Length: 439
View 1 (tube, rainbow, N blue to C red):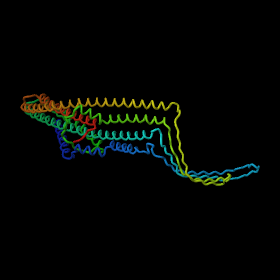
View 2 (view 1 turned 180 degrees about the vertical axis):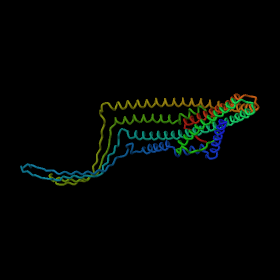
View 3 (view 1 turned 90 degrees about the vertical axis):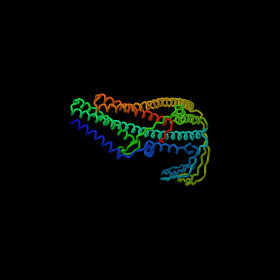
View 4 (view 1 turned 45 degrees about the vertical axis):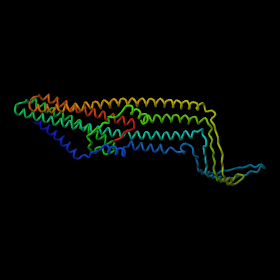
């Protein structure tokens, strides 16, 4: 009797919790979830900042095209004791002579040619900006994919909870009939205990599934960057896009996959790096000018004070004649860098194609299992209904009704798993091709 009351208490607690949640939880749509993530997610915010920095760096001044203008101010003082012996033999002694010198003014230095290095620098800055933008879009796509996958995982787990609630209801019915038959002497106590064990097992399975569901909710709240204990409800439908074609996916990935695009940009950066190194073989030419105002006081000198002001200008040219063969070494290394970038591009392309192929197999397998699984669910449900009716009439054993129940749960579980497998593969394939949308 105690076991029976305990089973009733657990069942009604589960039912009350599910009912209360259904009444109070706000339904979070997939579109709203993605919108919140795009606004709040920390990875996206950091990515936007990195992209802005890379964009800010693309300037002519940062590349070395523009002159440098500096203003300087210098003042020096000294106190000296001086003894001067003149040509006529007389000696002049000056004690505590205060020498002072002050100069100030603007100066300009402008490198007008550095072996085309400034052009290579500017191209490199633009490529790094483009690379940052690709990585930023990848972060956004990856975040959206995580939100979508977590959302559909919640639907999958929630449907499993519903199925387990149905199993608990059936086990309770079985327990009730076993008790009724025991009361009138048509069944043994063993049958009642077996029915109670079945109910307890189904309840434990439900609680385990509920724990996974709550963990997935925490994961979703983490992606949305909000209170991890925020409660919400999700939809109940998973629609799989069954129109994906392998050839189209591979073609899109070649032009849109972030990893492949990044490898292409790194190839261009390595080629630009060689140009930057080769600039060291050319002359470096710069012009300089300035305007200076200076004043000096030298009590022990021929002129006690001197004021000057005026404009200065000049040109400087230099060329590397020999630097210990380092120029050749740097160029060889830069060419190896180009070769490595090409190899990396081919490797990444192959990896992406392999990943797409594996995901597409999983996608097609999930579609096939969905079709088979839906048919199995219908058959298993009908078989359970018939078995339950026979059990009420006493025409089958408790083990047979339990087997029918297990078959129905197994069919539901496999259908949900196939549906989620196919949807998950679809999401990842679209993420790889940078073509995720939530419509």
